View 1 (cartoon, rainbow, N blue to C red):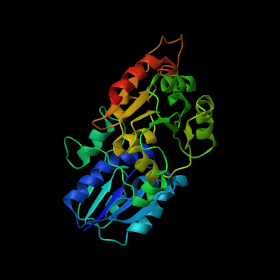
View 2: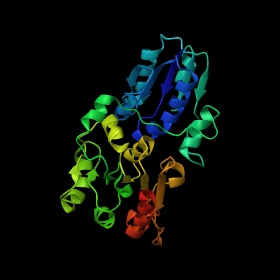
View 3: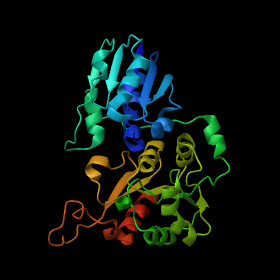
Length: 299
């Protein structure tokens, strides 16, 4: 059996989709999977069991990336095509069965919309995959630690650096590992936190996603902004605290039995405020609120 699975371009959405793949692998243990995803999400799927091929979909002008993907998969007779991007691609392929997720935002958590594609309620929880080599690559790091991810793909989602520092200092003493993605922007977001915590280990942009997953599987606690790393932490089994302000936690909160969120307070809107201004500021999420939730997860 051959299954084509078209997932997201973003890490967080890709992680949320892994529960569907885990379910399908249990249902079809002999199936061979081809996964199509964006380049930044490659590490979410690269260690997946039963993976035959991983296709990286690089965005092109005029949606030509869909034509490029079609050329790579049209020669196969697929038993099942699952398209989480809501494209028309599956309808121009040989497919015994097609399941296409409807696009657009809807009420409720993203994971429930994903589960509905396969008719699953409750939806399967996300999982994380890594190899023995990935685990060995991070084996020299502390076995029990606090992981913080003070970065995000949008500055409005970032909790102030001073708040991260205050939270770390208020928690029980343990090794602190600072995580983030590659690139100058992520390094700049993490820099003030690292400067204020001279004993912390700087891992920003230094690990692959499978290595991060292997590492987080033994974390005492993960605290981070709404980001792909937050979802990966929960999928890896770490007690996970997500910090939310402008993005809706009821749609994109971390999923798992040891995952929690804390929310920034709404604020008074200035006269003539536009929609962007009306988002809760991350500055309105007090350290005390995050600290109380973090202590509960550590208990």
